[in-house]
Amino acid sequence: MEDFEKKVSIKDSMEIEQENSSCSKSNEILNLLRKFLEIQQRRAQAYSKLKTGFSEYMKSGGELAYQQLCSEITVEFNDCSKQVLEMESLFLNPDYCRVDLAELLRAIQTQEKQKLHLVLKKAGRPSERLMSHENCSFKKPMEHECVHLQEITEAAGTEEAEANAEYDNALKEAIRGVQDAVTAINEHLEEVRYEIAALETE
Image (cartoon, rainbow, N blue to C red):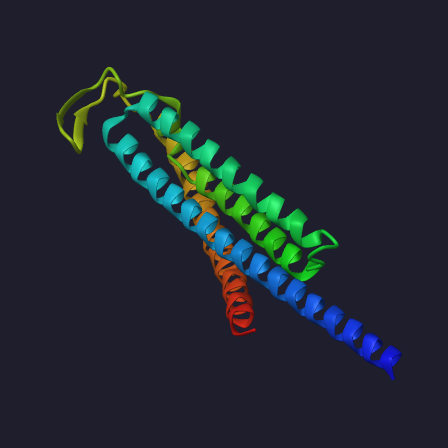
């Protein structure tokens, strides 16, 4: 009878340890997913900052400030990606064994990369990207006397119109691609939120 009580006691103790370990892992996963959502918020803020900076660049022509902003944004996106990759590898770790979450983060990373590529692709018309307006005179924030104005011949006008039409088509394609990427990212983020809700109810 005494051996039976020892075996039951050991079994009960092991079950309690497993429950505590499981609860601890759930909390760690929950914290990682919350941190991931914070990283996504940082990405959204970086996109907003990039959009504002690009608008200012198009108004003022301040290329140096825009290049500096692009460098800062690149560092921010790289840091976000690095942190997400670390989370992804944790979820693949046997301690967590959450391949589903690793794949979910990988899918979001892929869409974020595509989105960033398309956002950068749609920045500026070909003629605007190739010239600096630093030597132009600005009378009002939205108006300037461009030193690049030249007499437009029919051939040059046709060439520029073709370049602008090609750019417009590429821009529309890039915008559609960004919209598709954002939709996919939002769907994946909804899955992350569902997982968080499920872990919170455990």
